Image 1 (cartoon, helix red, strand yellow):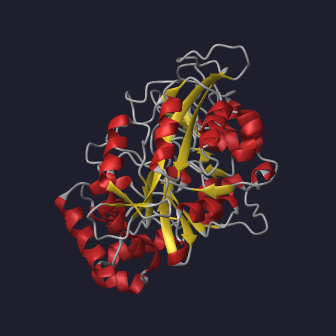
Image 2 (cartoon, rainbow, N blue to C red):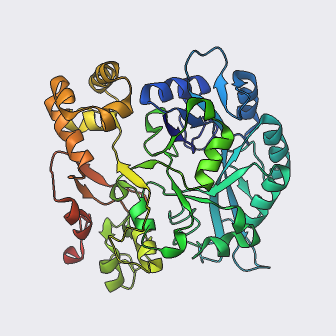
Image 3 (tube, rainbow, N blue to C red):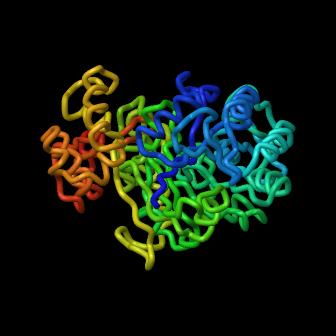
Length: 431
């Protein structure tokens, strides 16, 4: 049986997150989307942890369900933290350092039971204030984090979040590392998976041979309910096999069935550039300017593609033997909004979304499984758009420096041409 899993989530207690992110709403949204396993998110926050304890019922297998709910949505205890530490031992971990000497890494933590969460929260509170934000900032190294958590419970699972993003990814351009071993030191032995992030997909990881040993997982890192599952990881278990341990073991054993991915060009850190100057360039073009913005003369924010190119020891298009599958997808409400020209939060989009989900069962069934002919019976334009997405025949203007990319799902292009074409806001020929 296939389980779509969304491990990296947030609550209303995390910065810039919707106040509608409650456990009840997450349960309902997961059911509508077709997510079978969802992270609680933010278990380090005292008020959120209290709600988790009050409202969740243990299934006796390391997973939880909402008390009183008749859904079959399983929750896994999860949280995200940010470690801030000097890259050079003995250095100072200044909070606003932009020299590249300070590492700020986001990590996700999965835990098997509430007692372990309580112990981990107590231990991590010595390094920062967990009540300020659902994603607390901790003055400790990546290695110290993993060691602290694993000493409390060896069944814990830690993985670096959105590994390529410039400021907070383990490989990010603004202070990141060139390898897992460099970042996690002697605790790298406990790192078994890397999260793609919105601006990358597995094909980009395949270009770097030293990453072959890690499972590639994907999560939505959602700050609102509609964004839940915009990326996800798919496992296959017998229903009686399902447990916290089964999920962790499947990742460790690299038995991920596939991931569901954002188009990386649509992510907001794919290309290099400067948002304020309206300059967006491919890595090749940015290098012609020595990575310096020709408008303001400051350094570009170097995107994910630039970092991948810098670490790659394989050419674009390389596929390792036994590589796991992945699928690109676009949230259904965004598909409907684009096709109709209506706002994504409009009543029209909500009504069309509800009709499709009612007919096909879940959002993911519409996006990934239902036949295009069946969808065409409901709406020909939506069917055309979903067909283009499934075949990767879309046009995208890549995101950069915090600006999401712009995608056209009714303007089909040759899939092989997409990444070879610059869709910058201002290209090198404009400057």
